[in-house]
Length: 150
Image 1 (cartoon, rainbow, N blue to C red):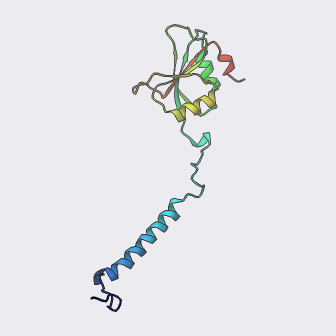
Image 2 (image 1 turned 180 degrees about the vertical axis):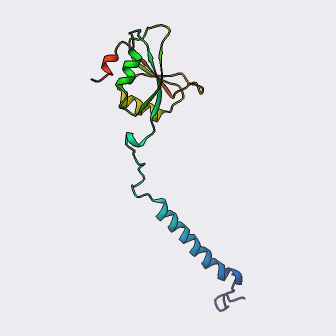
Image 3 (image 1 turned 45 degrees about the vertical axis):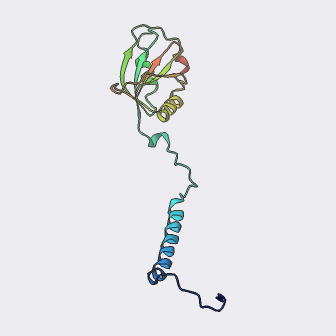
C-alpha cells in the first residue's frame, strides 16, 4: 500500500511560472489601483455645470406668428441680452398662433431646456430639418407680452 503522508510533495508549478506569477499579480494590482485612483473624479462623479456665459449661444429664427407689426424684431430686441443668437426674422404665412412656441429644428434637448429657461416659453414641438439655418425657431404668439421683459 502506498503511504501518501510520508512522500515529499511534488512541485507541479513550472519554473517560469514561479517568476511570472508574482509579477503578473503585482501588475494587476497596480492597474486596479490606478483605475480606482484616476477614475475617481474630484467632484464625486457629478458633471461640471457651466454657467450660461460659458456655453455657446443658441441659434434661433424668430418668427412672428400672430401678425402684429414688427413683433419678431421687437421680440429679438427683448432677448438680445441673453445667450441667444437671432440669425433671422420671419413671419408665418398665416398669423394663427395664440401661444408662443419653440420649434426644435436641429437642436438637442439640453439646448431646448436652456432656451426654455432663457425665454420662459415652455411649449415646444419638433420639426427636424438638418438644413434649417438655426437649431430652433421661436414662433411668437399673441401671448408675447408674457415673454418680453421691460
